[in-house]
Image (cartoon, rainbow, N blue to C red; front, side, top):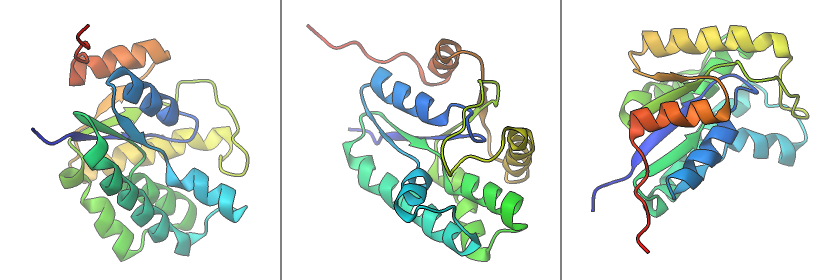
Amino acid sequence: MSRSLRVAIVGSASSGKTTLAARLAQHYRTIWVPEYLREFVDSEARLPVSSDQIHIARTQVAREEAALPQARRYLFCDTTPLMTAVYSRHYFDGVDAELDALAASHRLRYDVTLVCAPDLPWLPDGLMREPEDVSGAVSALLLHELAVRGVAYTLVSGTPEQRLAKVEQVLGRPATLAG
């Protein structure tokens, strides 16, 4: 049996990453890895600080590794260490060396990268979400990081149905179940 492809789903806050990851997992009859940052904020009841960033990124990767054996054809990853590095650069004016190295492995770790455009209605999400006006800056920084690191990506935008159709063009349609 061939290995499952790891699909990175990145983008600014409220760009539809979680919705897309869950929908793709259902569509392709596989699993997805939720964004650990959400759990961190809920369990710690605070926003992360600079020194938390490497822990958040490492935990995200560990959860991907644990999920990979259960994936069928694709493992959809709701965010990556690269996104953690982008947020570190934006909020903390830099990325520590260990996080930068983990983010640099993006090209080797993920087979496909999907970037969610910030074109959906912005929704606040408790403590975690930055103000709506930050999405453009974070998106621009993300696209710059992808270019600098030589990471190929597909931009997905529009309604959830349009996004799914775009990803189907990239990944192909799911196999139908017999009987």
